[in-house]
Amino acid sequence: MSHALDLIRRTFACRDGKILAGGVPVRDIADEHGTPLFIYDRGVIERKLGILRTALGKHFTIYYSVKANPSRAVISLFLEQGCGLEVASGGELFQALEAGCQPSQILFAGPGKSFAELEYAIRSRVGEIHIESRDEIGRIEEIGHRQGVRVRVGIRINPTSEAQGGAMQMGGKASPFGIDEEELDDAVARLSRSETLELCGVHLFSGTQILDFNVLVRQYRKGLHIAQKIADIAGKPLRTIDFGGGFGIPYFPGEAELDVSTFGREVATIVDQAKKIPAFAEASFIVEPGRYLVGESGIYVSRVNTIKTSRGKKFVVVDGGLNHHLAASGNFGQVIKKNFPIVLLNKWQQAGLETVDIVGPLCTPLDMLGRNVNLPPAEVGDLLGIFQSGAYARSASPMSFLSHPSPPEILVADGEAHLIRRRGKPGDFLFDQIVDGSHS
Ligand SMILES: Cc1ncc(COP(=O)(O)O)c(C=O)c1O
Image (tube, rainbow, N blue to C red):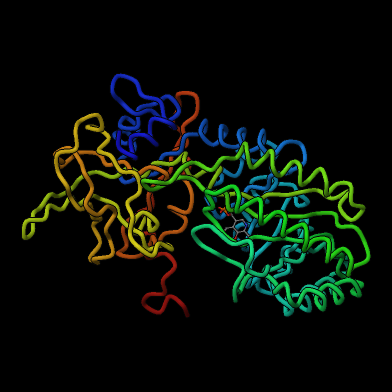
């Protein structure tokens, strides 16, 4: 079985030869709502959350990382399940609060929080702000002082390199994220002296899309080592130790699922030992995953619009492209373009007889959704499904490029498909523009 079919069968059910999301045939949803669109299966998200919770056991609290998929209905789902939220902009904070998240259940990270964003977060009394630079210490102090409040902060540390891994490394080298481990003494001493800032904990997050649990185990050990140093310098126990996200999902041939159960067992031993140390006895251990929780739930569905052959190469042109799904085009952090799992949804059980390139409608050679994909003979009107598209897909895409309407989103649960975001209108691109002196 092809890698794509294997992944699809593991995640989604089938009935009468049709792939189902939340019990509804994906093809029917596409027919009803039109293409291109994103479809998410709520049951898959809940299953992934359940697996992670079981693996991590009672010691860890899960904060959903909103950037992976910031749709209101998805955020609400995690709130209903008792998760906190990790946000990384004023906009995400706004969405978290609008969805009804208790401010105390929000963590605010990000390397370039503006003064206004920090004012908003502090006024909203978020649970913790994660400090990413020395500059930020001064800025938060100033705002806390002005608002007359003590601000709970964590310090994000960019660790030294020995615990690295994952597809996109965000630490262990020169990095805009966090304060270098080599400089933590000064930063922690400064925080400890502050009358406005209350140093609660540490935040460590050095890479995303990690599939090898050993890498995570090494990072958690390293994290605790750093946390101990911070507690020693601060001279007080820590309240939170946030290990970040980074749990990966398989996208490409040769990639296996992350073994979260073994990871959970290993990390339970580490945490049990850590809890005996006074610095961590009362600490809450946090993870803030995004991709692992929502990535597998999503399918990006487009329709074949044109088929053409150029100099012997067959191109299947679909009605949505990198403007909606930058990651599938390989332009969101991939060094070498690899294909996401792709099938023709109305022919997925037929043998792949052709090797084609799948491109979107944009006038750029970058708009390549699949290179040398083996498919059954494609025809105009066929439906194309790109799987593993629930995280860093729609929200990580340049939707205004070429001014196509933005794609709608459907969340399917228990046999019902709910439209959770409308398709944009072509005119939407005009609304924020200043035309004919309307600025005066
Ligand atoms: C601070 C922070 N937390 C959590 C995440 C979520 O990471 P992932 O989706 O790999 O779990 C990210 C992703 O970039 C992040 O920057």
